[in-house]
Length: 228
Ligand SMILES: N[C@@H](CCC(=O)N[C@@H](CS)C(=O)NCC(=O)O)C(=O)O
Image (cartoon, rainbow, N blue to C red):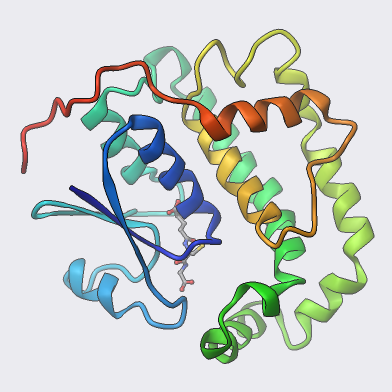
């Protein structure tokens, strides 16, 4: 059985979790503290400390750079989910960069405003330290003071997706592709604190989000990869 090592509010973990659910396979979730990556470090033989990381039998799969999508491609190939069709090569890469940079860059700040409700107390010190080392002391207070503007910016960044959904149920066509899951993960992080909803003006995106929450692959649930 595949094991997903994650923490639950991570946008990238939400995307992979939804892909695994979509595939219909049974899988195990192992939550690690964001402050303790020793399990990932050990599994990857000291090559990676990020999440998501997955284990499938003796294989351990993790990203090799910021844009690699190794895990999604592995799960896609294993269960033949059709997430990376040749016809969308290149275009999807452009779109996921936009999603993971432009959209995620705003969404995570809005969620982090409520970090004390999201991060367990035992992990709060290292969470805050990690953020402040990366973004400067008091960064979360700054984001809180900018909340309204950040929400406005997020709404703007989502306009292209609302437009992509004008005449189809998913971003590119009749079935979800990788970028649908990627956007779902990033929005899942934004929504995680339960303090927000998707912008009311983006009516198609709201329906898409509900559709994405329950989408199931129609490919028979059987791995096509031999166990490694
Ligand atoms: N592009 C990677 C990004 C993964 C990533 O940034 N994960 C974060 C958690 S949301 C992480 O573990 N970063 C390393 C750290 O926090 O030290 C992916 O798609 O998996």
